[in-house]
Amino acid sequence: MGAGINFNEYRGVKGLVIAELTETVNTQGEVVATYGTPQALSGVQKVGGEVAEGTETHYYDDVPAIVIDSEGEDTYSLTVSIPEKKTRALIEGTTYDTATGALISTPKKKKYFALGFTAEKTDGTIEKNWVYKGKFSGGGKEHNTKTDGAETSNMEYTFTSIHTNEVFTKTGGKPCKYLSVEDNGKVDLKDFFKTVIKPDDLVAVA
Image 1 (cartoon, rainbow, N blue to C red):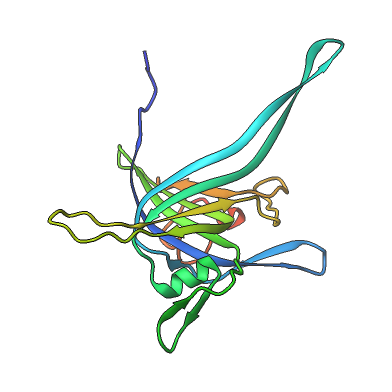
Image 2: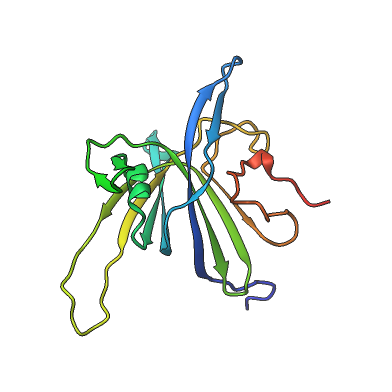
């Protein structure tokens, strides 16, 4: 039983980064996504992902005849150390006062971002990920009195991801939500988080 199966689990996550997304339309009417320079979000304790998808059965002549698939957003729950105020203002869509270093809760105007992180498996395999288009929500925090214990509190955000408007050759002219690749020698991943690597940027090692 289990012959030929590589039993594996995830154990480890690090290097949480973000890059601001700007979308434009070129002269051919194609959407082009441009990303800012990736920057650290904060320390990461947990990245949890949920996929919204479902099926619905349509009946004809009193029998189930067609099953319709639907796909929605992907939701990433992020448990992180407290981000810098400048970073909080950026992802929460509020205001950062450079002169005083203050975070000011103005009416929110949120931008799209790419989200990147590195995961590790129990066999030591390193997996690198870019999630291409999403917005942040959350950022609630809790302040507790000091006690004799070691209790502290962190912060939680939700990153809601949707398909890109940009399409790619490697996807057969379709949009996508994320890219996930293992550091197994097939691809040079040394500079994977220096820029946002799109599917067509990924080149196999000769």
